[in-house]
Each structure stands twice: as C-alpha cells, then as structure tokens.
Amino acid sequence: MPSAEHDTLARFWRSELDEAAGHPLDVEAVPQDTPLTGSTVLDVSFGGAHGHRIAAWYVRPAGPPGGALPCVVQFLGYKSGRGHPVDHLLWPALGYATLVVDTRGQGGAGGRAGATADPVGPTSPQVPGFTTRGILDPRTYYYRDAYVDAVRAVEAAAQLPGVDADRIATAGCSQGGQLALAAAVLSPRVAASLVESPFLAALPALTHVPDRQPYRELLRFAESHPALADRASRTLRLFDVAELAVHGRCPALFSVAGKDLRCLPSTGHAVHDRYPAAKRLVTWPLAEHAEPNTPLRLAEAEFLADVFAPAGMPHRAPAFWQ
Image (cartoon, rainbow, N blue to C red):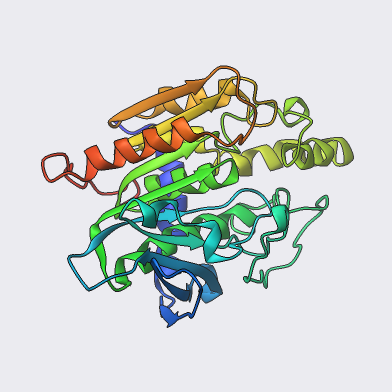
C-alpha cells in the first residue's frame, strides 16, 4: 500500500504537471551557422512552467540524414548557462544528439551565459540566490518551476528532428544532476539517466547543511529566519531528490566524488541506495566536487551504449504520479 509520503508527492506532482500540460509546448528550433563543421546546431526554445520560454541548444552530428538518434538532455550546474555549442560536443562526438537546457534565470558561471529569464520574482522572504526563492510554499518555490521546465525539456527533445523519442537520457552534475534525476523520475519519457553528485539530496536540518554554495543559501535562510525554517523544510521534502529517487523507473548511472565538500558523498550514496530501478554506482575516492573526470565520461558512454542497445531497452513504466 502506498505510504502517506508517496501520496503527498504523487498528489503534488500530478497537480503541478497537469497544470503545466495546459500550456502549449510550442517548440521552436532555428538553424545556426557555427564553425562546428562536424555538428548541426539549432537554437531551441520551448514553453516551460507557466508557459515561460526556456532556451536550449540542440546539437547533433552533421552528415546526411539517417536514422533517428538517441538524445542526451543535459542540465547545468548552479548559475551556469548554456554558453556556446562548442562547450557541448561530447555527445555529438559519440554519435548522439544532445539538448543543452538553460536553467531559468541563471547564467554566467564559468563564463557561460544563459538566455532564459525567470519572470517569477521573490514571493516571500529569501536570501540572495535561487535556492530559497519562494521556499515557504511548494507552488511558488523556485525549483517547482525548474523541475517542470526539466520535464518539459524532455518533451521538447522528443519533438526535435532526428531524435528517437524512445531513447532519451538525462544528464548533469550538481544542480544538473538534481534536475536530471528529477526529470527521470517525473517524466515517463526518460529511458536512462546519468546523475553526478546531485544537489538538494538527503537534506538534514537546514542548520546542518554544508556551508558551501548553494547550500549556504539554505543555511543563511535558517539563520536569518529561524521561525520559518520548519516551513521551508516541509517545502524542500517535495523537491529532495533522495525522496524522489524512491520512485525511480529507468536505468541510472550514479557518480559520487569522495572529497566533495559541497554535495557530500553521503548524499550521493543515499540517492543511489534509494533508487529501485536498474542502476550502477561509480565512485571517485579522491575527487572533489565537479572535477573534470574522463573515466566518468567513458563510463557514461558505455552505460548508455548498453541501455540503448536493441536488446537492452527496458520497458518504459509510467511515472509514479500518473
């Protein structure tokens, strides 16, 4: 019998995703001239939460039209934007299409600009940044819209030219890993997920989160608004990806960095341990947060090749809220 926590999560996400489905997806894809002669690039936008326009790059191997390709939907780390297509050539080099999705309102970290506004401003007390914006109500919380955007990004990918809609994966590190896992759990379209050091996972009391960005924003909120900390924690339970992971339904590869002081190794292990579907865990005992990691990229390529092989494609189960 489903637990009360399952019922609460299912009711919330059914309501929010049903509301989002009332807005047209309205995918637009404009060909771009770039110096990337080995890739075809489209400037994509689609209707995310509330119908707000979300920007993305669609990059696929150049060449004569052939069969539809698997597509890796890439989500980005905190305050990073989609940048330039030259930043996102790994998957096209491996023969996949990729959709690189802006996170609403963010951009600039690492010199990578974003192209997506967030029309929803502060709705309640917060500290600077995005992690506490609207945190006193799940329906106004920043990550409510970001998770809906992520699900809609998968729907947009399925409509792009040359994409095999049955072979869509999500991928990301840190906030990107959080969004990749949320989309994999909430969208029935996702066939595989690559989750590296996910943010907003296995949250302790807000006064005990790591004093590192962006967790620091939650810590400062609890310190500045102690009377509101419990209310904020109730909201966060609906977005904690370790809670959502319990309802995982597609194969997933998890990665944990042993020296990560931001997204602690224990939180990555908790997400993996709670995930009930086919999974693999790779650990890097001496790695810090989001370090460049060639062996991980190779492991991800091998994982997707196995999942997307004709004999490896799993039956696509519905999302837990459906």
